[in-house]
Amino acid sequence: MNTKYILAHDFGTSGDKASLFTTDGKFVGTRTTGYPSHTLPNGGVEQDPQDWWKAFCRSTKELTRDIDVRDILCVAFDGTYPNCLCVDADGNVLNNAYIWQDVRAVEECAELEAMIPRELLLCNSDGKIGANETLPKIYWMKKNRPEIFAKTAKIFPAAQDYIIYKMTGYAATEYAPAGNTTMMTPDHTDWSEELMRYVGVTRDMMPKIHKRTDIVGEIPEKYAAECGLAAGTKLIIGSGDTECSMIGAGLIHPGDAYMNGGTSAGILALVQKGDKVRCIGGLTASSGTSFSWLKNQICKAEQQEAERTGEDVYTIINREIASAPVGSNGVMFHPYLAGERDPRNNGKAQGSFVGISLTTKREDILRSVIEGIGLNIGVIMDGVRAQGLDVKSVVIVGGLGKGEITRQIFADIMNVEIRAPKYMEEAATIGGAILGGIAMGIYPDEAAALEKYLEIAVVTRPNPENVAKYARLKPIFEKIYEGLYDVYPDIYDAKKWLTGEEV
Image (tube, rainbow, N blue to C red; front, side, top):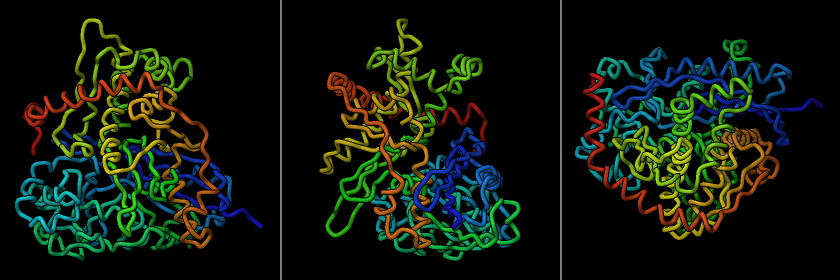
């Protein structure tokens, strides 16, 4: 009998990752196709959804060239959110997607909070609106791009929603992306028509909300050749990238915790609250992105060395980071390069290096970036522990977990054992494959599927001496944020008038 496969697509911030698995959990391979983000001085961050589609087609074709695509049972999705992508009544794209990193609507948040009754905003646990969420982005569009809003027939909060819509004409999303739009009822069971009315959005403009194992269509003959899949292949809605990463990292039972080490790194954990299991913790706005920024803007010499030797550039950078002492000789980095979600909820926060002196070395600067990411995520970890969960061990997934030195720094800052899976960067696609397998009746549940997919390869334990040093540095890290808090809005505004960017 022919081997059968599940294909999973992860639409991340920097590209689409396609992973292929056999139905018994064997990893076959991964292909990633990158796409650009367009960053604007006003806090906007946009992506062209046509780039998503091209990436979907290219990744699929490259990954499946050696198999019979008729043996692929389904395609399952996950992707970034909350976004704002609008299409007209004919399905034509009206705007570049305002992706989750987009915080141009930071001032609109205050307007909306003053306008909308607090009881309706309890779809967010604190009753506050973050600039990255879909609702303020729509409101910004209505005020600043009214010609787009006037033509809008559908609004999509997740990247994969558009891919499914393009192929099927069916507007669908899943509960996790929908729940981060600030457009749902407080119990997160449905769109809140009363809330959406304040910005002129109707129920018809929003996609139908599905469970993550729902089959929402199939590959049509029209697009089969273009995307490289057999007509009739089932399409599984999946979930958000965070939720699929959680599944792929084994976060399924109360007490489980994991560290997302990707673009939007952070700590998430499951706790039992009465008769419900709740997810606590949070994700930052720019962690993996801060490391990428360091590589692209500061580490030109390391890039040249990588080109000359063929060695991975991050391996070279990590070697230099390891040569610097704990605490980076007093240099501290705050990774707010795209504002901040958790642990600050401050769209106007700005990145900074503090503590640089004539004795500062290059390796101090490099290490301070990883320590700053870790200290910031450590604030989230402290919040998780304050809610009564004694976290002693986490599974780490994503690029930040690949380096031995980065794992050690995170373990020491948070005083936690870090376990790295064999396929660390495939956590989201593993989660998607598991959901696809459940949807197709291959696996009874997530726990049974994880036994086939999850394998821990490396364990990193905290160094008590380093733990003590970081414990003394944590209050200083907090004081720097508090000291700059009132300055961040001035810098935010200065950037707008310095660039002449229209707001």
